Length: 414
Image 1 (cartoon, rainbow, N blue to C red):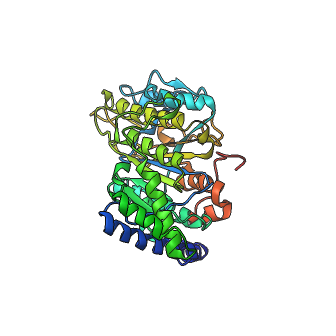
Image 2 (image 1 turned 90 degrees about the vertical axis):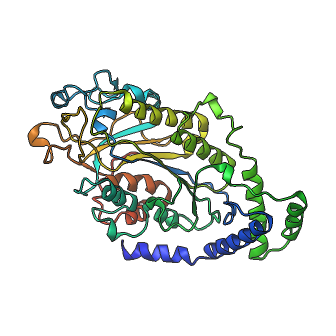
Image 3 (image 1 turned 120 degrees about the vertical axis):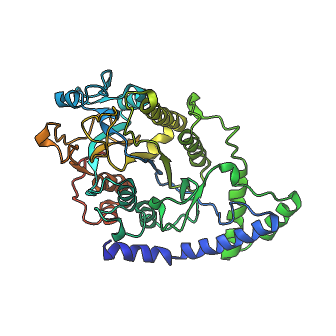
């Protein structure tokens, strides 16, 4: 990481807002200790007018040649005589979406979806663990060179005026690497866990205790009680999504439903990180399994965007995967670990309705040994452009040291 970015991170850690967060966290912990311990032990509330960033990591190496099939390339059909996509939803005449991604096709036609192909990193290991670590930390090829997650650094690069530790939320049992090092983030499974079982008399006493005063403790106390009041009204079981949206009954669907609730509640969320596993399809890509996986992603995103409605204009969603699959099908009618894959960027401000790809071709001489789709779009350039909309080009580039700097032009001229 560059010296300027480390300096930025260090300055953020010792800022007045960070010190106030520490006071607020300690105070919230004390309140919880009095009223019954819960996951709110470090919560304070903050409001932000910045555009939230949502990341969805498809762990296990999604087959981009199935999700976003190059139907205009004859060599695609030659390499995949059995598992090829023959009924793709046409996009630009060359690429087509898997039919299970009908919800994404609608977003594409509306101009809110930008598919990208031949995306990847410089990592050559073809190891899930290594490749995911590279992308979550924003590294070139060695994750050990950068100790923090790129989303954590992104939060640090934003203006230091949002005191909420809910700035970053991961719907996970543990904090993922992508948020490693963030001081204002938490990993949760269910919003229903974020509640405080206080008696009315205790709540009244606390409100009276912190009703006045301009010191950090009094302000943090009021903020803690405010977030308690807001979050206690968020009941995922009773939540009615907007626009008639219907989320799939899956982990991803549930996570995006709760993300929408948080964004609508205005509790200072600036980024949410979600996962969807199960993409390591070494066998049986001709079975319904992969289609069901894609269906869940498409329907979950379709419901989320419909639920947000006009608020989608202020949200950017990145769907990423660590690498793709081998171009040729194997004897088990699946695909082995490969290199480049397909990504998706969704949002009201994205220049959607077109596929972003520097297509390398699928002839034998065009592939990367031992038979993989070449990476022609560095993932760091995609994320640099996504981040630049909120923190500017210079700070965004500092998140990803030594990136090529060939932005795809997702939000305007590259």
